[in-house]
Amino acid sequence: MTLKLQLVQDGEVIFEIPLSPSDWPKEQLKEELDSIEEDFDRFSRIFNAMSNETRLRMMKNLIQKEDQTMNFADFMHELELNPKLVWENARRLTEGGLLTKTGRGKYSCSEFGQRTFMIMSLALRRLIETLEELEKI
Image (cartoon, rainbow, N blue to C red; front, side, top):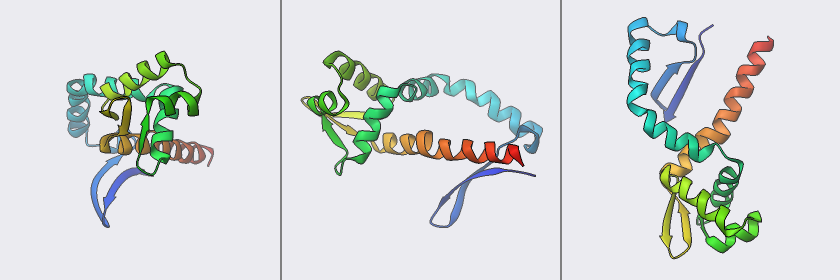
């Protein structure tokens, strides 16, 4: 059975990858794996930004806001964080490209941040659940 992950825009498949290395043509898999090294720094910033419960909670709160904007004090009060934690985690999210500082103490979720959060938290969770269910069959 070949499992593939597809990205579809307006009904058109714009990206598709097999989820098992054995389903890839050997040369194409080698090229893909070799190209990962070029992106280590970028991946590290993104994974670092998303690999912390506080930062995930900050992103979740931003995504839930109608204008996807919060100020420093909102993070402190809504998430019960001290100023140092807000500052450090906002810095990491900004470095990862997920958060932008829009004014004095005000932050918004970047377009990249919205999509990254959706992929890495919601879609990845569903994908892992599906793969675990398939393992049971």
